Image (cartoon, rainbow over all chains, first blue to last red; front, side, top):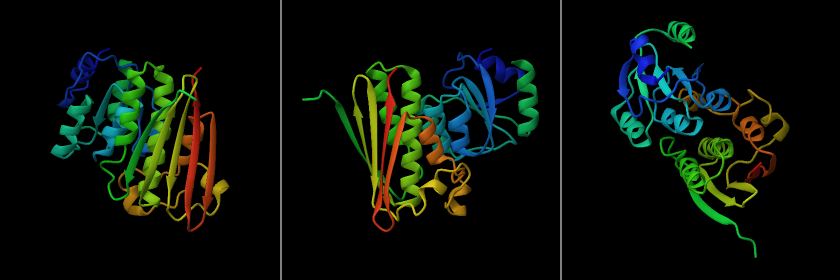
Length: 108
Length: 141
């Protein structure tokens, strides 16, 4: 499943669609950045409520296929600009982390 | 003479937003040099954790990355408060980070454990009141 297909299935709003053709190979949920870096796998869709600029650095290093901000969280404009320059996919869901993960798990 | 490539970075202590720039830069360079993705991931994550530690605890520091064909050596040095109890600091979940840092998603007590987890060798030299020097080696399999 590509990021674009996942976004459609989960009704995600694209905030930065840097590479929608990327394959989603798994999922990971977490807000503590070291946990995410230590446990998330490359290709996972990462679901979080964290929206500060550090999520872009973590995404660049841990290499998830997309970052999904749950609970309708919107990052500041500079975070989105940074994600664009780094080629990081960022989407937003109005639903909470549990609901997003439940639906994602069914798709995978 | 050895044929290593050396990269040097100053890690600024006052800025969580720019923290990670050195790690991302190293990731880019290692990719250009053709290292395997797993090696690049481990080096850049270990280095990012070290960078964040220096920003949180030591008002910044310096990072040197030495690239050899068979291994990558990361040296992080700061003049911060030092680590009083290294065994305790190495335990997952133990953290002395302030609440202001936790609200950014850091301070989970996973930094040093992650650095150890992602590297083949890790050595910590630290003196309270003087500073900390961490040397990590990632081997290229």
